[in-house]
Amino acid sequence: MKTLLSRLLAGALLGASALGAMSAPALADDVKITVVGVGDIYDFEGAGVRGGFARLNAVAKAEKAANPNTLYVFDGDMISPSLLSGIDYGANTIQLTNVVPFDLAVPGNHEFDFGPSVFLDRVKQSKFPWAAINIEGPDGKPIDGVGHDTVMKDIAGVKVALVPIQLDDTVELATTKDWKFDPSVASALNAAQKARDDGADLVIAVTHTDHSQDYALQDSHKFDLIVSGHDHDLRMGWDGITAYVETSTEANYLPIVDLNVVVTPASGDKKRTVTWSPEFRIVDTATVTRDPDTQKIVEELKTKLSAELDVQIGTTTNELSSERAVVRGEESAMGNLIADAMVAQSGAEVAVTNGGGVRGNKVYPAGTVLTRKDVFTELPFGNKTVVEEISGADLLAGLENGFSQVEQGAGRFPQVSGLVITVDLTKAPGARVQTVTVNGKPLDPAATYKLATNDYMIGGGDGYTAFSKGKVLVDPSAAHLMASDVIDYITAKKTIDAKVDGRITMKK
Image (cartoon, helix red, strand yellow):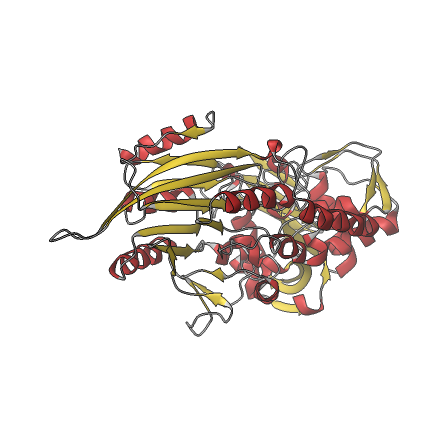
């Protein structure tokens, strides 16, 4: 299968600096079009010797200087989550990318972590265009400021169509309110065909889509090149018809595709023809000197961040783990701490928050002095603590959803306070929760409970549609940041003794 060859080739490419391409004899009207793609970049500074916006911008500047026919595209996810974005709602990412503006930016699911209104604020601040052909407002019309069409560019006489596609599952992964997301693959294929009908020589998809959708687009052979983000992998390949790049994460390694285009003008009864072949390159940003203009901004942001966050708030007497596998797969001391803080600060009876919202992925040994920075590292999304009255039946339905994808390590796994739950993972999803007690008493499906959760989940995020059925007592507009609630809770207690204490017991 052609795409299988492509996927095997992708793995082999990671050890090589370049892939030689089949090329036609040089002609006077040959055109080289360079495509630089990046996505899923969150850390403004970059961790260690790679990544960060200063190195990214240095590469973008160098590629544009080397070849004026360079397309610089963003395939989604930078506004969130990050430590600084939890404070400035992603404004830093726009400030940094405005130094070297993209030719096209496609929003990822994390662009909506703070809601559509914040995303639109970032769009207004951008010196580059945002677009996605499959995003619409509640009225089915395009969103003001967000392009809804294929972007056509004339590059040295070559007509290039850029098709921007957003992940249709974003409605479950972020806070999108009543925006509509049309099917990613179907929308892309229709747009590609229209671009061909409109005379495009090359059709390039710039997508924030998952692997299965990427492969469907590649198998369709409607596109010449697909530049994709979302899955955080580094992949490059070509099946002889469609080239495919997945742009990895944090700008650690930057995949670059040089499209060697040969344009044969019409002559006599022969029509104009356009052929092309790809050459792949990978830039290891450990070899890149930071762009000084960008680095100046980075240093200013670091100073701002330190002043805000390097404040000690309390000490933990027990080890706290926020490792990804832990918070998404079992009761955790960190999850208990966060959920207890939500109850204490909101006055709710119980709390449920999704493990996928806990992002630090680290272990704090017993005796660690915690800072504000630690809390914002763990809770970078800017989620708010909302409170609702919910029936016992809907609370139970929400918990069933939370345990429905434990085997996949899904972010919906619940971290709880005020609840003791037994779960049988040998049962089918939807029938796994065996017993629930609420503050020592059996859950009553007919009773009403005061639940603290986050604004993402109360909107149905991570599949928690049952939580959208309650009567909201404290809505997002009046709610506190979860991170602020946790900071205030730790500050008041000074000494934290959170531990795993039997709130969730699972039979596997």
